[in-house]
Image (tube, rainbow, N blue to C red):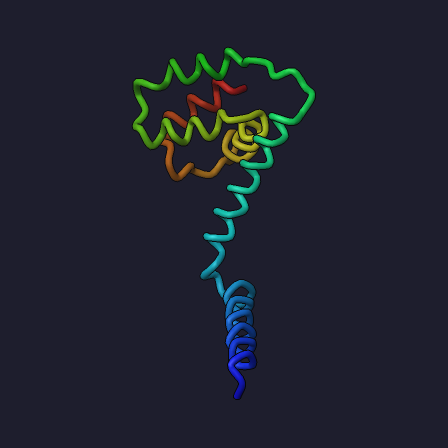
Length: 121
């Protein structure tokens, strides 16, 4: 068997295994979700930098961070920074966690989550 042909066979088998893992198992769900979140973050930053809208400083969110920062851990502060990154992230957070039957957040305590939701309304 030719060396080129062996390379193509290995490439084809690798693509087949990757396709199987992506479609038939949940082994790649978490890395794919992380990649999707990263790409959305990049897209939002590009929209913010290339858009022609005037960026308004929201004093409400900066005040929220000052008010709650003493009672949060460093992990919770990092999550709060991600939440307050843009209007899109704030709105998606409110939609997901500030509704009546909101699920519990994996990184924020229940009290801090309720406080953030109350301040963002």
